[in-house]
Length: 466
Image (cartoon, rainbow, N blue to C red; front, side, top):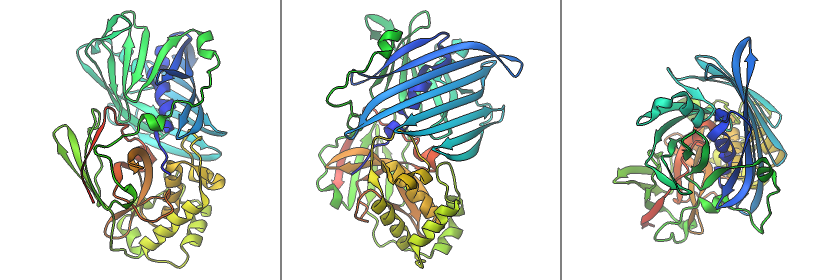
C-alpha cells in the first residue's frame, strides 16, 4: 500500500498564501475540486514589540480533506510579528489526529533560531540566512512591500514550519486572465513545492488564490466560512487528484526490473539522480532510466560509516542519537556487520510493527512514530532512516513517485550507503524487493527530501519496460 505525501504541507502552504497581507479580519473558503473543504481566517493589527512599533498578523486554517480513503482533519494556527517589514518572530501550531507540532522561530539579521515541539519531542535548530535574503511569512506580504514589481520579478524566502526550512520563492506577474468577468493579471508565485496564482483587484483586495494542484481560496463572509461543511459520501481525495497515469500503462509494476520514462511537467525544473536512477534533460521534459538494484557490493557497517559520516547525524525529526533509538537499532541488527543485511533487517522490522493510517496530517518525530506504530509512507521512512543512522548506517530520506496498479502516487522511502552505492529500501511493502517503478524527486534530510515538487500538468510516457 503506497501512501501520499502532499498533505504534509498543504495546510502550511495555504497559511502562507495570504497571511499578514490582510489588514483586518477576513475569511476565505478553501476548495478542492470545487468542494469547500475548510476555511482560513486572517487578521492583522499594530502592536509594540520590544519597544518598537510592530505588526502582528494571525492566521487560522482549518481543513477537512481525504487521502487514500482516509479522512484528514488539520488545524494550522500561526502568528507573525514584523518590525519594519521584517519578521522577528513566527509561531506555528499545527494539529491533526491528536498530534501537534509547535514551531517558535526567532529571526535575527543573519539567522533563524527555531524551537520545535513535535508531539512532546523537543528540539532546536538554527538556519543561517543566505546573504541578502529577504524572508517573509507569505508571498503577498512580499509583493506589498515591493509595489514596483510590475513588469519585474521578486525573489524572497518563505519559512516553512512543517520541514522547518526556508523555501526560495520567485514572484512575477503573468498574462491577464478572466476571473468572474474581470480581466486580472495574476501574481505567479513559484515555490519549490507548488506554483500559486494570486488574483488581486485594482484596489489590492484578494479576489482568488489558486494552486497548481487544484486548491483554491475565495473570500467569504464570516458566517459563510464558519458554516458547517457538508459531509459528502467521500471527501475530495488529494492522492487521487495528484496521481499520474502513464501512457502506455505500466504492466506488472511489482515485477519491473528496468523502466525508462519521459516525465514532463510545467514546474519540474530539476530532478534527482542516483546510483540506480539516471536522468537526462530532453526537450520539455526529463528522460528517467531506473534500474532495480541487484548484486550490489556491500561492505561492513564500520567501513560505510567512515565513508559517509555526514549521513549518520541526527536531524529534524530523526533523533538517531537518542539512547532508545540506539538500543533498538542494536537489538534489530544484532551481531550482523554487513551493511546491506543490517539495513534489510531494519526495513523488515519497521514493516512488521507499523500499521498504515493516512489520517495523520502532520510530519512526526521518529520517537512518536515508534510509540504509536501507525502512519503513512513518510512516517515509515522517518523511522527507518532514524534506526539506520542509529545503527551507524549512512541514510538519506527520499521522496518521489511509485507505481501502484499502474498509477503513480507520491511516496517516500530511504537510501542506505552500503559501501559502493546508495541502495534504496522501502518499508511499506512486505517484500524486500525494490522495483524500478520508484521515481526519485528529492533526497536528503526532512528539509530537502520533503520539499519535493508536486508536479502540475504532468505527463508520463513509458519509453521502455522490462
